[in-house]
Length: 214
Image (cartoon, one colour):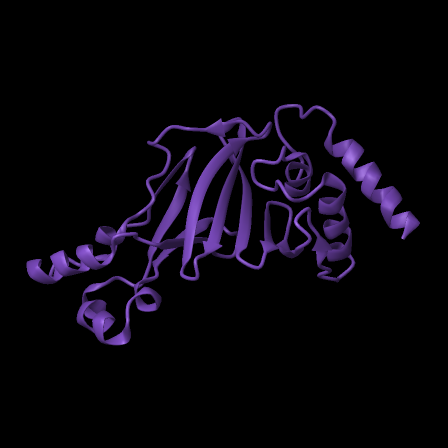
């Protein structure tokens, strides 16, 4: 354990060194995230999770609210963390021109999953333009042939549209959006709308932007 702690501190020290234009791996970015995404995890706790994962273990680490956090998946550009029983965070590091961009998806179980996507540079400064990505709403899942009255009923039923986002693809380079209507509505109500809904929507990276896959 002392040796693992030594390597955690060493890795943390290296991660905190100034980044010269680009970050090295997703672990570097995970370690230096200032608390906007991972407010309940110390840097040492984050690196402990990485150490355990690299040794083939998914060990639950105590967080600052006496809960448990677990690193679920990781490679050189992507990681997925279960930060609590009701929240999952995914991070994908990529290049956009000369810049390193971190795309973060935070999903909360409400209990129907709902996600938020944000993008940051390698120094954890957020990109705030609305033109970078527009999260789909329920209307985007509706096919054109849905009758007008049924469309109006669905819009009334979905006062709070819940849409889950997640990274998919071999390289986690596709973002898939799914609606939670089947979980949100009672079965008899959902049956009215199901045939007129696309099961999912896909998005891809284009420079700094995230655009629909056509």
